[in-house]
Length: 299
Image (cartoon, rainbow, N blue to C red; front, side):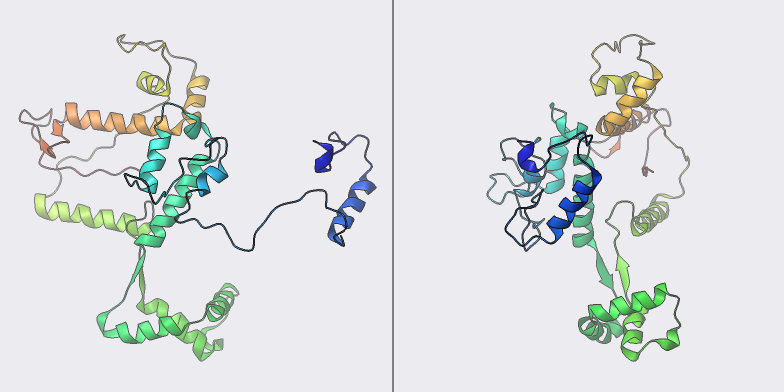
């Protein structure tokens, strides 16, 4: 099997360097009569990301060994969004998904890009809508590329052609709105506007506080991670070493996120007396009395 892939000396202790060089040159100038050392199958078109149930199982055959259970299945009896199915996979008892070295990052990247595709839009003044719309339709990708190159080289505005100036002037009249994309600058501005609305409706907040639960030193996180030796009935449970706790936190970021959400929920439910089901304060309230409203965001 190894010889069929072209590898006859994996340790490279019996194959001279000139043999590798000659093999590489032969692969470059092959006339088609001999197969190269390594064949990479490719197609003329990129694999579609949307409405492709075979995408994720094809990318991760070890996580989907039977090739079923992909995302965006059109004939699913109960439709489920991409984000909800990803959350379901990460919350399974089998932690292969959350322990995979790249599954988390790829799925998050796909969700962010889909959010950017579906939630980003342009805004323009009504008086300039007709002129801006015609310019947007007429602008060419080559013109935008030439303008970008000109700006990168710190060229002067006077050196631009009339077509390039028209494309550049669109930036003055068009604003990009991406308030629904987590972590974006527009999302931060959106939250600030919500806080100002809260202040206008409920008045200025009485208390500002920062909650920072530390998962690395918490026995609750060790239990969420799966350590069955932790006895939460004790006041000071015996924990593993600090190095092992740090490794566990780095290995399972999903458990770290679950721990953070669990702590914040418990603080507001049992310490401040907030009923999440009814979205109001409990009849008895908490240590600060009855809460009228609160606003929180994670860094």
